[in-house]
Amino acid sequence: MTVRIAIVFATSSGNTLETARMAAAGAAEAGAVTTLYCARDFSAEVLTRHDGILIGEPTWGQGDHHADFRPFDDSMAKLLVPAKRLRGKGAAAFAGCDRAYRNFGRAIELIEQRLAGCGADILQRGLMIELRHNPASREFTQQWGRDFVARLRGELAREAFEPRMGRAEVDQVMGISAAERENRELGGLR
Image (cartoon, rainbow, N blue to C red; front, side, top):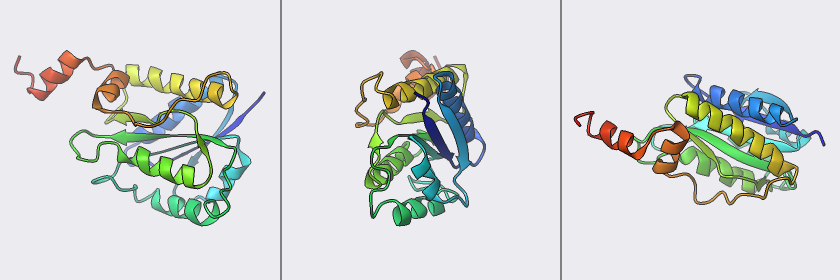
């Protein structure tokens, strides 16, 4: 069964775009047809024509939507929420994050709330990438995309999406061990 997946993203420095591309590569490896859409100046109406939806943005400021993402979120609220027009569609979220901010990766929560409000089924935990991708996070992201397709087809069980990833789990995605994290936090003074 061929599935069509819309991957919508907002980005500032290209990191969230890279996440979108890596997830698309993984989904395509699993046999999905993927289309990437930049959230800026984009109508959420297009989402209704896909079987699955992946949406991502960087966590902005103290946990707000990215400026380029806000109009798309407003479009979802206006066009999709009232009639829950994404009912029956599988979805998941991804976000850039930085532990220097109090609301670490809050964009995941904002996107998932909106998707649920539109009637979408959140099929797996949101993916958080801290700062910049590395080989470990690229591999993880591609697998995340493959897993999404498998869940969309019913080949993998739906994964609880709450609670969202914590700092230690994001370190695992990034390939950072607990000892390495401790060393980084001590400023390399070991």
